Amino acid sequence: MSLKEQGPELSVGEVARRAGVPVSTLHFYEAQGLIESWRTRGNQRRYPRSVLRLIAIIRIAQRVGIPLAVIRERLAALPAGRPVTAQDWSALSANWRSDLDRRIALLTRLRDQLDGCIGCGCLSIADCPLRNPDDRAATIGPGARIADI
Image 1 (cartoon, helix red, strand yellow):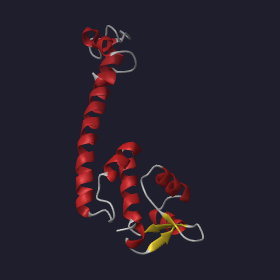
Image 2 (image 1 turned 135 degrees about the vertical axis):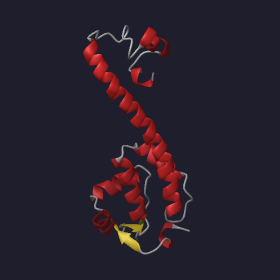
Image 3 (image 1 turned 135 degrees about the horizontal axis):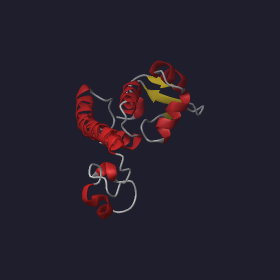
Image 4 (image 1 turned 60 degrees about the vertical axis):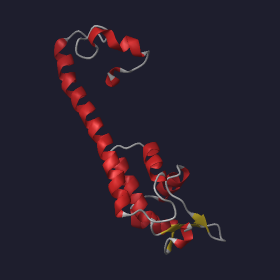
């Protein structure tokens, strides 16, 4: 099914108004490969009505901190040529939930360890028994890698 066959077509202004985003956001999403449009003979963008649900999904994912590259990758895995379904959303959200759970656990651990670092006073990453026991960071290479330990 082509984009044009996915239901009534909407102009860029209509999509922006109904989705609650600026037109520039639609152009950005399109440039990033997150949404698609087609052009009329007068060179005006047109979108299928189903793009509204897709924009809602993108905005929700962005709001919880999912990077656009991950959003694009996951949306690309959906079947092409049809609107996003409730089942699609369930699969996306379950996948993102596990990502978010890992990030929450990491941030909680960092927050809790930060209190200990402030109280310790050593201010030495190489010698810090909490953040870098036995200087493990030295074995994984240069750069900011403490959060990965």
